[in-house]
Image (cartoon, rainbow over all chains, first blue to last red; front, side, top):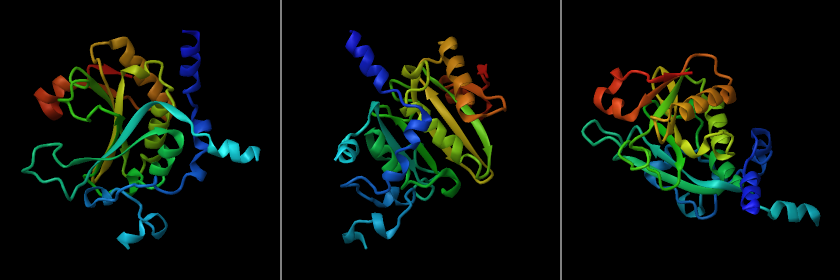
Length: 54
Length: 186
């Protein structure tokens, strides 16, 4: 159970640590489906819209 | 080559989370509440969180009447959800266009497991309205006063929020709608 405790600790991330990753993750996840009912929530720029939707 | 190795490592989160969206144009007054709510995407590591967050409008850019949720995977952001049924929520209110940072800090505190009673947390929602924005943090066992107070206090610290916040039981909200009284304050 000592190991389990350790893994729990490892999955705690401070705000500053999390913020470091923001700049390197700009594109929507691969395979992300932009359906009409969520499109309004998204910042759609040419770079992250799949080709077939343009 | 060491840089490459670092880039390849994903940072797994303790829980998987799902972003949900309820669009103002899909909401109709006739339809049952929640019927136009749609899951956007489920993520379980830091990198995918950002690739979603960076492409989803911040509250100040969403149309009034939009609701954006981020809940633990398998918990539906509805009072009827079996995990939420006995829960409640803390709510913080913001002037129009002023909730963006608080929304981000709430998400980071949740997914980074910064709450001492993180197991109590179901998720968060931002309600964008014509005159204000509201962020609510949903929790599981409303009757557990000590846990709720701890969450409320910590949340205010993370947000650097100085106004009083109130905690409403879902059960009371169901019965009394907008007249439901705060059970706890922080």
